[in-house]
Image 1 (cartoon, rainbow, N blue to C red):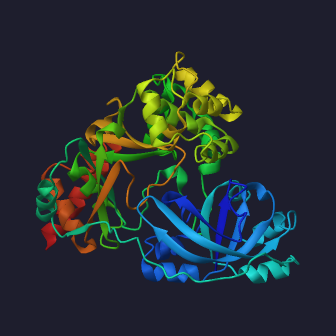
Image 2 (image 1 turned 60 degrees about the horizontal axis):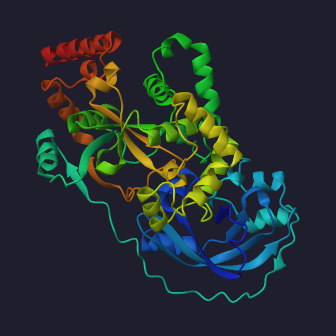
Length: 466
């Protein structure tokens, strides 16, 4: 196995001994699921294993030299992963070609994405088989620095074995001032907090993400009448989500019993489920007509190259506002020194294309997208124009350039997990049915009502024979 580091920062690997950091959501992108499960928690033991792996350091689009080296230390918190590295050997620009990338387990899109992956391949064997010349790098002192594991904040998990125990725990939660509580049910505890557009195959390759805008356009072309009442991109995304097209929306609910139903309704008796509890800062809760929501929703209409470019630019200091600059801008949008960064960001061609889409929804929108906003994960309260949203007390998490939420949440969203025991799922579903929460009421359409009635009488026959 080996560590792969890709960054848009052309100065990142300039020192033989240096340090770098990634946001937690970029850690283990383009990585096989089995390795994600193995290393995602970054325990002290996991970090020691990762440090023993050789490393390949690249710049996006293979700009400049590449490097081979090792890790000295890793520290992590809820939101970022920092590491110290040692570059021992370098690879001249141009020596890594498309065939080499394929052998290294990289897709053509992966090389355009800032991220940290772990690949289940032999780095040195591949380099040797492709005849790549490894040159000694300057300053090869590889001094291992003792690691202090900072990933000590653990997500609190509670195990529920019945509906009563689940509700007692939920009702015991004190609502924090300035925060609202939402829930999401997973039938398998291994599911990630990511929208369907971000799903990968077993090898860590994106299934839909690189075709997001194309898939949405095809659905609109094939079924235009179904979208006649939708005026904005968000409304279209909500309807696409309803019809199971992968989108950048993640369903959540304000009703814990709905989340419990989803945690029990699939993989019954085979996998432990979970209810994820979100404590969301009210500043991150927006309504469907919010300007920021409009900006994030329209990212979905951009080409994959434009999305990757914007995603990388919102990480750069030349565009990203620090806390002081952001506070200045909020106080005075015209005279703030922050306006220079914002103007430069909005002058980028790919941001201009995003503005074009935004103005199709809101013609009065000013050419002033704040780069920080595009990195957000927002809770969106949509219109109750859809029977499913109404019946499920539904809202959404809308993802911007960051397409996965860390298991620890974000600065504005804290998380708790309630484990639902696999052996108790069927009994919990029976108890939920007594409260009129079942397939017929969760999915209020005639075909689902028919399925529910059919199963109810199949079960009745079995019960009568006992």
